[in-house]
Image (cartoon, rainbow, N blue to C red; front, side, top):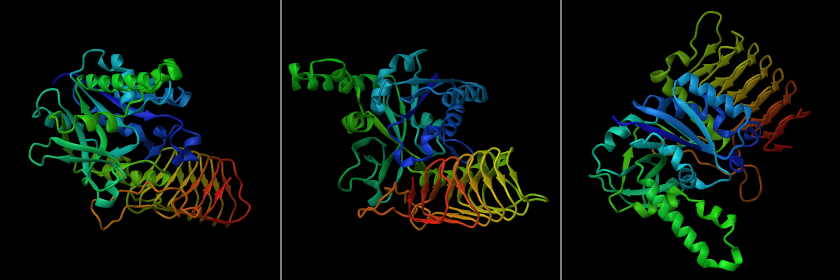
Length: 430
């Protein structure tokens, strides 16, 4: 086995708007799903690949205390070099790789993985490496899965040779149906990819120069625009049909994490996978323990009253207090929250250090994929429907929100540091 590396693309703060108000307090890639930061699941999968030398996080978040301590904890926990490389602005999925190509190539890796930070999956990286051995040298692999016809239009669509797995055609978010095979945002490259990205970069530069030498001036703005490169639109579309790109179909679970509603769904997928990967993380029933239904993760530092009923699909974060008679289902309860006696939390995310009063009810509408369609994906729904009303979705309480006793909050989003004085339905509470 030759040395390999991994790159996780974590984006930056201008995006993640569908993730507000949760992304106001924490970079989205560090939001806890099934009890652990989204990208910790990526790092864990990468660390299990033999000969994995280093994991690089690329994005344009300002390095913060939270991000730095996450990186150093991950290094320590997985015993592998983890570094954050900051772009000066959003360069796209290909631009960031190109910008940091020297760091990626340091030590001369034979191949490297690139993983989008906003997906959840069982990441079959070892299998991808094995499968790649069969393909011609200097070819690349894209992990893909099936979607239904209608939803495939929201993704990168791939037409492949069923026998050889070669990608014949690639279209990012097509306007008409192309294929049910969609790009999962997990790639395996050889160093040759940098030549392909360089070609796009040079073409971008030529285009900018020819647009007008005098108007733009060829100042930094032009360079910066030339460096914004998208793997999907600019590189894959050009490589398709040239014997350079192959698919790796996964039968495991996969979902995007674009909205807060999809975080609850991703949490369910990971919790379910813990049966095989981390059974010790799942709460069990027993004497003087709360009643557990289905898959539930409770942090060691949380205090849960034995008369509470949790599950299915619940994660309870550090230092949370769950009082007597509390009912929680399909929800994420974040660090430091307090759920008082007999309150009910359904299809909701309760933000850091929030309080839900006695007999209060916090409830949302799940945005789950159609359970009768094996290829259905979660809809990355918009917050509002065309006539300006809030779409029913999960209820989100930002950090430090207080819901007094006996109030009902339904299908609403409550911004941080609010104390409600009445019940709300289908509202964004500013």
